[in-house]
Amino acid sequence: MKDRVVLILVIGILLMLFSIIAIDYSVAVKESRPLDVSITNLLQITITGLIGLLGAYIGVNKKDE
Image (cartoon, rainbow, N blue to C red; front, side, top):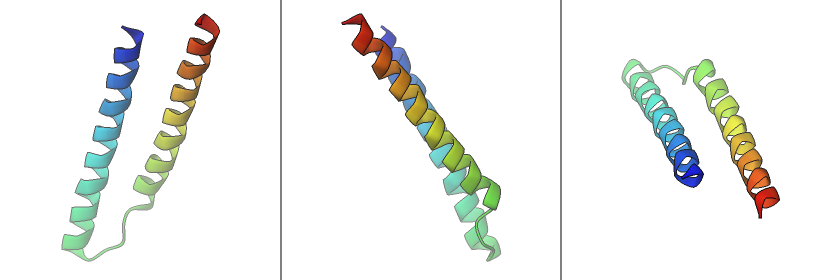
């Protein structure tokens, strides 16, 4: 059950992140402006957080076995 919760959490966060990036990219193309710096920072922070989340989950699962 924990595996499914973590999988759904990660997939949900990635889908939300990629939709935000796609929307900002399409607005930037329509307005002929560069991508927003805060979106790039959001991407970096979120990817780092997901790596930490998955690393902690894998570490806990290794202890249980």
